[in-house]
Image (cartoon, rainbow, N blue to C red):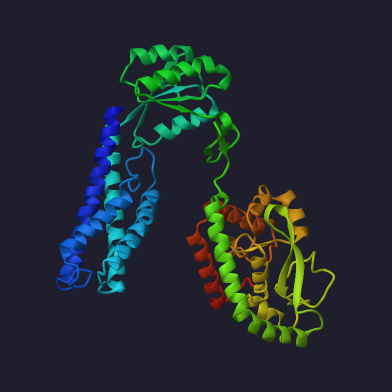
Length: 468
């Protein structure tokens, strides 16, 4: 096991060394193309640029910048890790350049440099990963594994380790009360779980990892295995049997001294993320309501009043965060009718006023919801709030429908900018919307919110055929 760990440390160092070489080679190439002026004006010579950027790159990548050495990793994960770590690198370089008054020649040229750097580093790392896979396929740099137990989850674990010969795992065999049909016939049966300790003692240095799925009721057999592994450089992994009925990624947390598995990770459960999102909502809603909204209200309000009798605002009870009901505000686009709380708007809805189509297609009808945002009932970005009738109906028809109520509803959302906007004529359309809402909850970032806002504005300017 120590040899594998040392190999991986060397591997990470080689990858970072290659990255630094690529970085400096590209700096030299750009310097030559720009007439020996570097990417920064005369105040920073090429050598200083190389030293500064190499140091920043190492700081941003030395801890978690390299993942291609892991036994199981997909190409897109390697690519995303490069892009993710490039963001703080760029910000750090620009920040230090500003502090020390290094003038950038051109942001366009600097941007082009970073794009080329990302592409070349990705190609380099994917090539490195391919070579590593060939090396592991030959039987080198592998982790020797012993399995204890044969539950369904252990069967799945075995196939994850062995179906791909480049994963870097080699299963030596398994322990179970009796030979199990869950494993292929060619997997060696090593004996009963109580015999595992003797096997490890007789094979010191020949086992790197032990995976155990015995139930906690057999703790008298499990604890000696843990103690032995901890004292003999064997990594012990407990495989929870919860995977027998939950076929999805789980997340481990500690509640006091008690280990807990949670079904999903929700970034907005963290206080700092909620503060960022709420602060952004307050600032944006205040700016909009104090500047553009009064003008829009006068123009749209007059048009609504002229087109049909009734109030300027249409308000309706919607389902909000944690299932709480709230009054959602919109500019009225339909004539006052008794079906407003039960019937969805359709493309050729006869209830629309003369200007109803226009304000719905341009999303103007949604603008009063900035009042809801300021009040705290809604956020600018989040799952769209549904009518109470729809919440009641779909919560019984669609699995996990209520998960979308773990966060505040939004004026716009991930589902709306990815094709699931407007009338839901069939059940699959609402299922697709719910799936995207849950994805948003699990993958929230502030940058994702900004991207959704950009896509919303882009779709409005382009014209959204589902807006009616």
